[in-house]
Length: 428
Image (cartoon, rainbow, N blue to C red; front, side, top):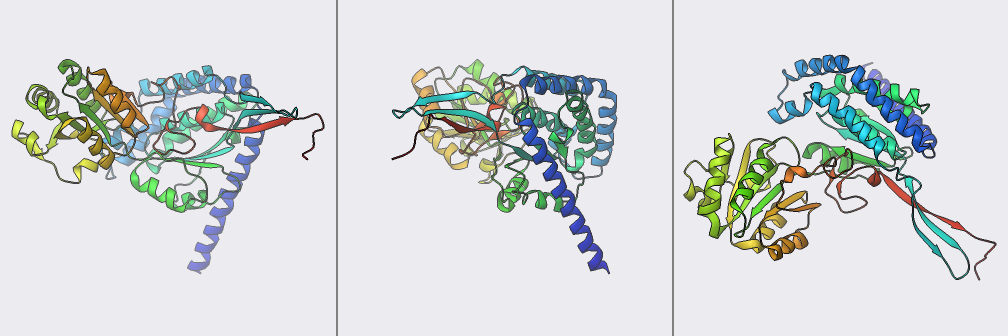
């Protein structure tokens, strides 16, 4: 009997997920040609609903946090999970910013008239249905939904169990905006169960879902990449580097590394490794170490770094490829830009890297040769964010090279098709 009950439950979950996908596909068909004004109105009304429901969202978040205290969650995950009035207001503002962005759908990117008179247009269109799987951050519910909606896509959201109640409260506000604007509420749906089997089923719904976007830890990304029948837009580890060149301004270097590492340690744009040109070890690295340690950062360094400061712990081979998401920084002295670039190529995750230097030629060499989604000069890696790039919000930082790379905003959630207009031409 137990086997029969389990089998029935599996069939019920599969049917539930299939219905979710079918509703999303129907909604996507309606959204594909929805007027920009209707999409913007839905976003603005959703922002108003989030503000109006602040008390409900905070209460739901408190319940999530109470549940989280009984789990083995890191400080970074707790930080990602926690909402307050400012973060809820930021969600509402994010929706308004997305509403103010240009609508990419319908933009004609290229027009070619062939010698035979055929007129060929390349035009932006929605991707269709996007499945988004994420952990911890309930604000992703609002950000992802807003971006998908503006780009004319339906979204199926599967947040982590730790943020289930917060996400449900946010989704209710989003549905208010959709309904008031006359758009289908099925345009933004949430997987209604925390059963891990639902993720596996979601990854097989290729008849409904066009793209899967996972946003979370390495184990989640690996599972999605290995099990999905649907194309995956990956957001891998943020093993971000700051390289301080011998021509760096010391004041800039100190400010940038403090911000890059410690502004928020739990975000993917936080620096995890500091590389310093050997000639400026004493003049530049020593004061940077003092700043970092005084601010509560643990330093794990190579032998040369340890020789400069006895408080530095020895770095292991694993440290160079670790995304700490904590106040821990690995530090290494290198022999110039070539060794820095080689280190990044060996241990980095192609996310975000920054060089600090006043030498324009060296900066351009770094920007050209480092193969990461975002490469910076004299700026903190914490600017690796769609909002800071003027995108309003982002679903994540894509570290792959196909379709989208770097911050994934509204434009990156569209594809294109060709419209061909003729006057009766036939091919000889």
